[in-house]
Amino acid sequence: MPKISIVVPVYNVEQYLKEALDSLVNQTMKDLEFVCVDDGSTDKSLEILKQYAEKDPRFVIISQQNQGAGIARNNGLKAVSGKYVTYLDPDDWFELNAMEVLYQKLQETNAVALQFDWINRYDNEYSSVHKSVEYSKFADRIKTFCGINIAEKGFFDWCEYKSTFFNFSGGTWGRIYLTSFIKENNIRFSEIPIGEDRLFGVMSLFYAPKVYYCEKFLYNYRIRSNSLCRRQSEKYFYCPFICYDEIEEFFKSKNCFDDFRKQFNQSKIGFFKMIYYLLPKNKRKEYKNLCRKRLSRDLFKNIFRLKQSFIKNIFSVENSFRHDGLYKQIVLFGFSIEIKKNANLQRKSL
Image 1 (cartoon, rainbow, N blue to C red):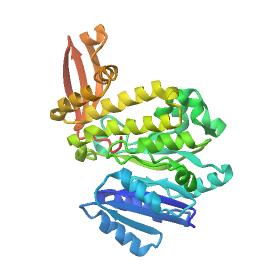
Image 2: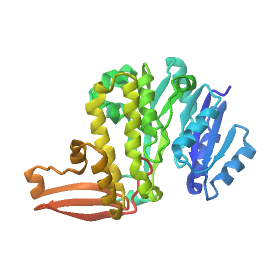
Image 3: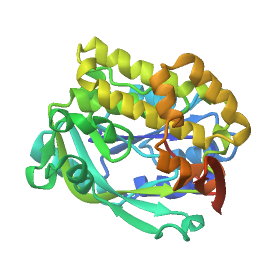
Image 4: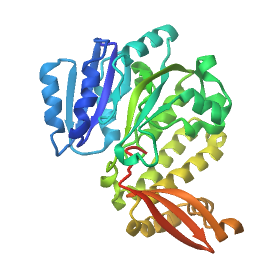
């Protein structure tokens, strides 16, 4: 049995894939397994995977028709044989000592879930609005939101930060889990193409008695251009509905939805709003009409800010993220004006 399995969902990332795979092959810990799931790539991604597998028997290659990262991760999880499992996005990379550091911490703590820090790596297109490198310390984030010093305690659990639960439940990278913990609790990814990791994050944090913390920057998260171009179709309109229906169903199955209702609605509003702004302008009206039909009146109003203060209706300035770049949104006497700040700035993950 390998000590750690790393699941990599792959779709059309030939430009970045070798850097990700090299960070696996060259880990200082060698007792590893790399489960790579090609999600119907149409570029040379699968060819690259096969080249690495020919040279290194630790690679397990799975091919599937294009079904999205959620299904790819679920299929990868079924195939892992390691004691622990973590995830790598195919355009990111690990520090070369990451698995060794994490395994040592897991042995010290006997953790079922372990959180670690990451480094945001911005593509050149972001140079006017971001530094190229930004160190993201999880302990600082949770202290800001909750006032809890997990760097001092060494762990946290959801009961301590229930009021901000959804601020920390997204994302698959940045954590490593005991494989049996994931499988025994049937923790899974949603099968939707956007927001697929939110259900996994909610379930894993809910079930973990404690999430231990490793205060090391071990993951490099690439924030790149043109990664959301394929997500502009109206078929993605339904993702937020499915995403939060699944999360609500999970909480209700545990008889605790009322405990999370306020935070759930706040998170839901934020996600629906983000999808709206990521869409091209010619798709927004259709999405808005769908939301009007399917959401409660209060939720709809909050998402689309139908009620604003008198001052905000007179004048306000906000930064907005769109499918094709960063904008400055100016409201002047009830009229909204969008000014593009920088083109082709796309976030790769929601």
